[in-house]
Image 1 (cartoon, helix red, strand yellow):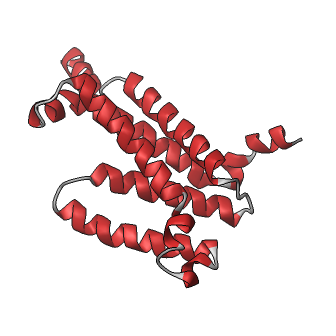
Image 2 (image 1 turned 180 degrees about the vertical axis):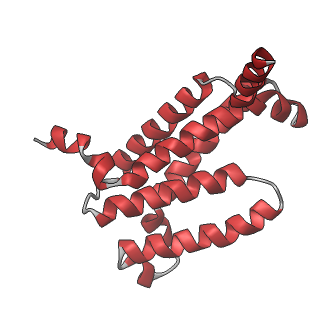
Length: 167
């Protein structure tokens, strides 16, 4: 009955659902502002989406296997997955505050924090899949959330349309 346990996963590990909601909001945000971002970076909208999706996959790959990356940095951190995740999350937060101050790569920091928190939640409930399976799973969650967010209408234009109809 391992398939049935997947249906209970959002209740046992709610941060996986938060990861999906973050992807949903990011997809909608990128859709609403895609022309502005593309003009600022002087690239086409298609190239903008390719860059964003590569960025998402890179974040998932880098932040799904921190124990493999951190093993080279510190044997103490590699001795425990929880210590590795906590230290990596602290590094992401500290670097994220610096990067957000620069107004660059804020989306990367938000996605990285959501991925790390989802991993920590899975480890908390005792689910530790192999890194490749985790990468595929988190990428599927993020890309599906971004796809649904892309399909959602612009909330600001919907509110403006409703206000214009009301007048």
